Length: 261
Image (tube, rainbow, N blue to C red; front, side, top):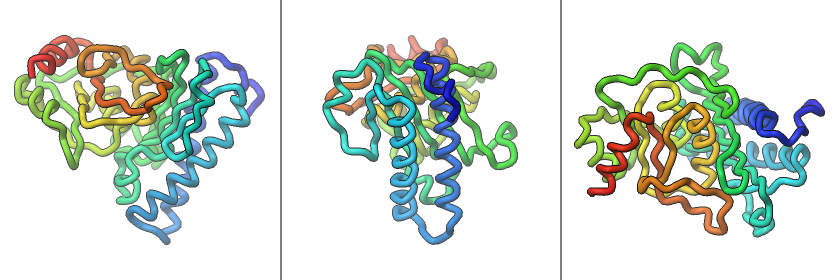
């Protein structure tokens, strides 16, 4: 990394997050390309390799910041920090192990409990904008223009266990369900114009959505808990039960329906 990446401002933080997420994605593709592992064994190996690289790099480039990762032992040291990097080296380990496209790399930064900067890499994403097998990286400080929403809303849900609240909301608004893997892939589906709504109530951890929320909020999307309260990060308990990421024009209606369930 160049020396200017050490500047602790949010634009530089977001740029660093994007570079780290892209590089970790390439490392993970190399791990999978070895063709020696598969399934959960491959997913575990990818988690370990990418996490080690991300943690060591962040410790070197942001030594004064706190760290929280799904794949590292948590310590209370981060609780006294204003700035905490929150990382999921492979969001969608199952999808990664199955050689699907819908997995992601999350590198987020919470400042005073707010998802302030971050990046989400989709190394194996599909679509016309994903050129030459390089995938896509979405950053909180390089927002793209949101495509126009569809008249009939689309809602991304878990491909294996869609939650009852999401199914109930979809039924009431006549939404088309779009099954998908990782939380990062689902959130970026709203950013990419592949869906209008992502509602999840099945439980997540801070690393599952810190980076996606930073990116989605920077693109002007609504981001909250499903009761409308703010999403807060760097808590002692890292469990985040639910979230809503959606086009702003759908937020009030979806929250009202959830409240009535």
